Image (cartoon, rainbow, N blue to C red; front, side, top):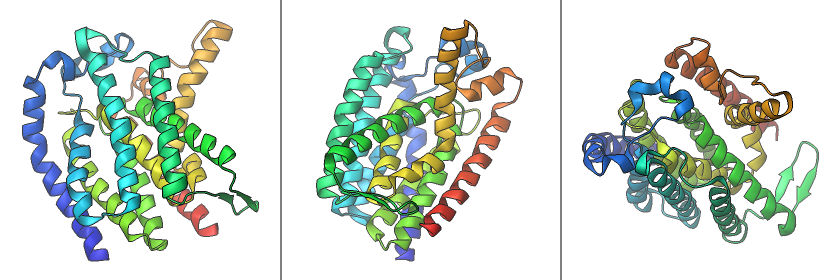
Length: 321
């Protein structure tokens, strides 16, 4: 089993690593206005040099894992994971294309995006509940066990929508979202091994290999960005993994960096509406630190260390439970 897991990481890394250079070259030439990153007006001064960087790095990860998973980790659960990744990834791809076409910045309207996210979340939640056998919500520390689909499925939908948006918001600096996601996938790999779910463990190893290759090209200054295609697909993936491994609430700890980033945006809007001024210099929180004068590398390092702490606490909670 362990040989297969290591092979999954290595094969996935090598495949993705050598595919990225021609992919980046093609991405720069193929209708640049549609696939290159435009910088939001309020962060343009911070990231002016990044304008024109290809914005579909997450798409190649989806392609790579779709090629390798049927060979290394084919099962009902891994196909549910692929379905979740591709459905949300295609929604992100649509947002990437609409968000850069004609030099606009926000893609789908918030209501349109929310509608599609809720629809995809509902479909994926039904797959997990009825086919993936994730039909119980348990909190062993307090002795709570629920198996009512009228409670569990809406909770899963909420988890999908909030997590995909949180990862999307966090994807604002080179290597930031990718580094935090790596801790999440490592955690789920360990849990899958402990639960003897070799198919899921093989899947997460394939993801880790591709993600490591992406991080190489996403290092500062990034040659390619994850884009909504990547952030939304990865948000759906870590949610599905948490659900299939029957520990969805662990995302409240494991995904705490994403929650804080999202919370900073919500708090900023509420504070400005109520008091007429901003609580942060710029939101999400990573842009606030940039405005304070911290370099991207220092901010990413700080978040990565925080992500590691959340990873360790999650392991402790999983051991106790």
